[in-house]
Length: 160
Image (cartoon, rainbow, N blue to C red; front, side, top):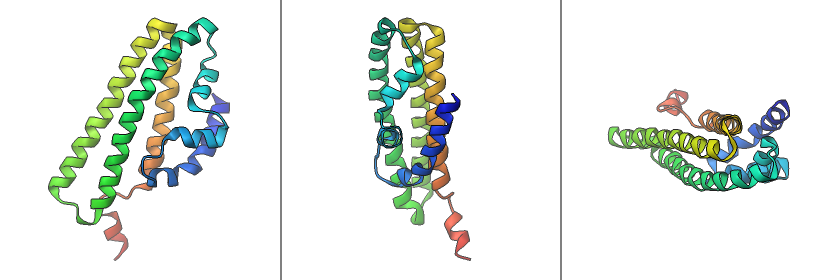
């Protein structure tokens, strides 16, 4: 995990521009840093037998399809916030907040569903290992995105 942490620290520097670009997948960033696809990184970290790997790949591929859809929605919300930041109304703020909460719940439901599928395919320890890695990666990405987005009204205060 320390090796992965070191690599992820290097990735964090790349994420500030990542959060500002429209719909850029974290896979592109990971590939540029590691020279591997995210799936290769996950497989390396999971270190499964050939039989387990075949079973896990099906679960992982389904997970990635759903995660990417949630990621698209997340970045649409971020872009919508950016477009409306200067003229944010109660109605738009409510829409964005509800959309963000729904997106967060979508990730949590996906984690739960994928954990249960992975547990059946490769056992609870390996399923927990995947869940731990994925939540870690998504948390780092989320934190970096949040660092690059101004709080509501923050830019107005800097003009004073």
